[in-house]
Length: 232
Image 1 (spheres, one colour):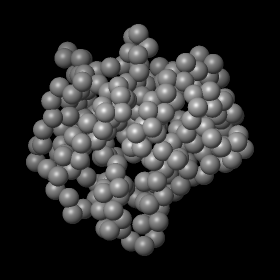
Image 2 (image 1 turned 45 degrees about the vertical axis):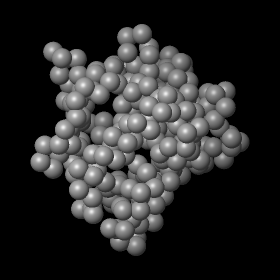
Image 3 (image 1 turned 135 degrees about the horizontal axis):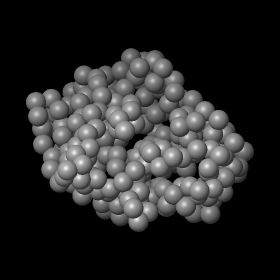
């Protein structure tokens, strides 16, 4: 399976089956007042923040800079629910997976760290242990400030909203809304996702407001993609 299709950035993802590792190569999509070396330091710090939040991530086997590219090699830890065959009509088979993802969201919210909750960013090994595999871009207040400073007025508003959606106040709805990115008909499972998150103690809105917020967040993300606006 082509792993690159799960990335909306100029990220190259390779699986080395012989060494049981994933190799990710990151490059900036926009010109920023941020060197590759400085960017890698932000990634390293973000990885540390994830670990401090007790969020399980794959072991980092190697990291380096190759010209304008940042390279990370991590242990291969399994497949995301899309690769595992997630379909709306099979939702009940994935309730346990979604509950585990919600538990990770809860940890990120507790530590108040920026977090991309798209379901593709969680993988499960053969024992159904969960791992979070996305640490690029290394979202933060500082990166948001740098990115907006380089944007047009029109784009700045969209960028500002998208960065906000990675913060704790929006994560439950953001996670739900991203299922529309997997299947445009996913609104029919929003109530089930809401109930799972409510059971985990992370959904504070009522069901109607939750669903409306989830759809709104996805619509702003789709608008950014339509306008080819990159966050990094």
